[in-house]
Length: 135
Image (cartoon, rainbow, N blue to C red):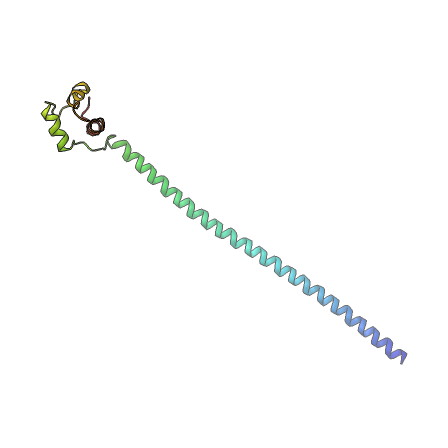
């Protein structure tokens, strides 16, 4: 009987040892799988970031081309693109005082606008400046 108990004890110890080895192998596999999954996530994040960088670089290049085109267009366009005509009411009022379509002397203009309020004089002078009629 004592012999049987020893055999059973030895068998149990051998089984426990095998279970511990199996458990350690499983833990190593889980650790390896987790490490691989982490690497895959990092790789996919890197790929996504590279795509986003490429998209942003393309948008930047497009914006730079548009800016260059706008600068080129601005260099060839006239600087004063504001209204070049004077409203009919202003032309009529100036014609009554003998001032025509030619550039107007500021002193002559001030004399012609003497009967107007300050706001009206400012409005007329602003219109003439926009039209390029004030010398």
